[in-house]
Length: 285
Image 1 (cartoon, rainbow, N blue to C red):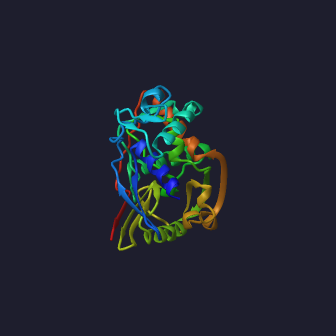
Image 2 (image 1 turned 135 degrees about the horizontal axis):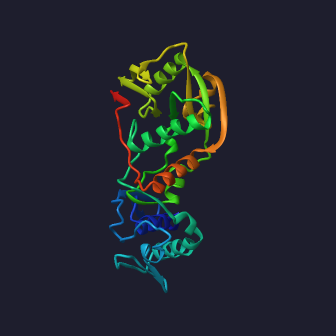
Image 3 (image 1 turned 180 degrees about the vertical axis):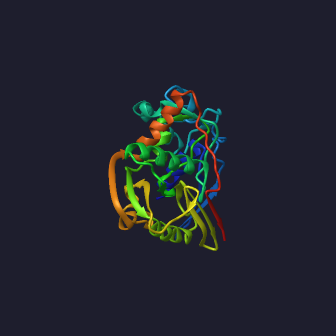
């Protein structure tokens, strides 16, 4: 167990991210303590790897000694072993390290609303309007589907695939307003709500104070066109859109492919990735 933990600690130190591990051994038990480290590669000088900088971003490995880009040398523990493994696999991962776009700033995942969540759920609503050939009134997806932040600067293919790693298919659901109201009441009881587009919701003390779609109050009997993912049709994140829908259509388009196309289109237009927040979800508790 100790060796495995040292290996993880060495990997985190090499990458300059996450947490470091301190291990104390005695005759009866192992005590593990974690402490945070700055996620900027400051310890080693290691940078994000692209297809063009593999030979410099991770440093070098020679005769069981790892030499970091910062010049620091590591000869003991699991660090050289981790460095050797990472460097060996880089050529096989070269396709994933192709730069496909540029982000103006880092976009962190921060419920109930952030630039990254707004960007991808807005794109979902736009994309699904074209895909299903009907204007989407509303779009909903889960924060849990965003697995990491958007880094600042060069964006490689692996960044997008890491952000959206799941095989979530885009779907359309026709849902009555009264059912969407019930859904909002349910989401208001959580700490995160979820990612929404085309709607504005105000919550206080875990109760919906106001909710509108398309700038208008939600009508109980009106059927709204909703864009989402198949994961949320049958209970994913405790959301079952399928049970409340009048009609459902499931596409063969994956969410990650939609976002990859979005970034590539921006790059083709000479644009950087950037977005905004607009207080579409406010939670006061």
